[in-house]
Length: 65
Length: 157
Image (cartoon, rainbow over all chains, first blue to last red; front, side, top):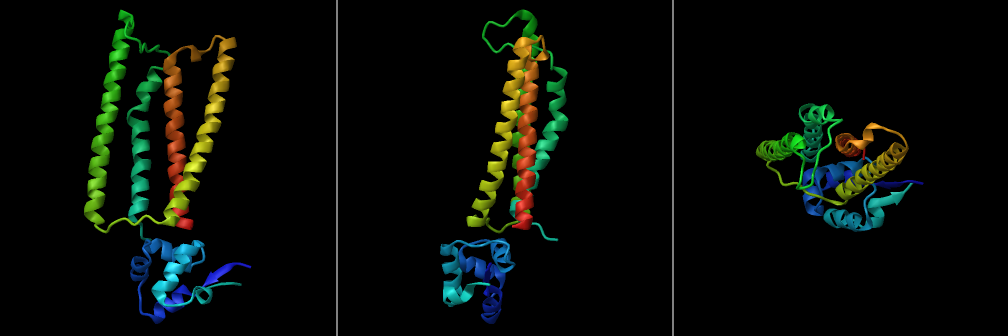
């Protein structure tokens, strides 16, 4: 099972660009791109920051598949 | 294909290593069999070689300062956005520096082995010019491999 996420869907629902989400979470745009493409698995702290930025619970945003 | 500010910084480092190899390494290669005397009481015959080495070191320092000042100023001029360093950068840096360290350690062991072997044979390792050349070559190689791996990780991770 791999760690997947729905960051792209929630980000687009909120009409946020990758750069805006990156600024809110305090990371670079490249990091958001990598996470959205499942190339990079974020730490729990970063996952929570992204979830907070998107107003979603972390267990909804990240899931195992 | 877009390239980020961090990737350009790594490219600048790689280009520096290549330029250093082209401009300064030939001098150390030409002095493979020279014995540089680093003590205060140098023989008169070695004085010229030592002063040339000192001049070369000063040239390298000036070249590095000018090169990095110009390239990073140009980079800052074109990429005005502030660089954000996050956990992904930390991961990439730790992976690439680990590879660089392992390579350096491996080469150093080979180098020490060669030095010990030279004790039993009349080899060129008896000149410190050879040792200086090999150490510089080793550092450049490791630096380039480390930077290339860093660039690869930035593209794939």
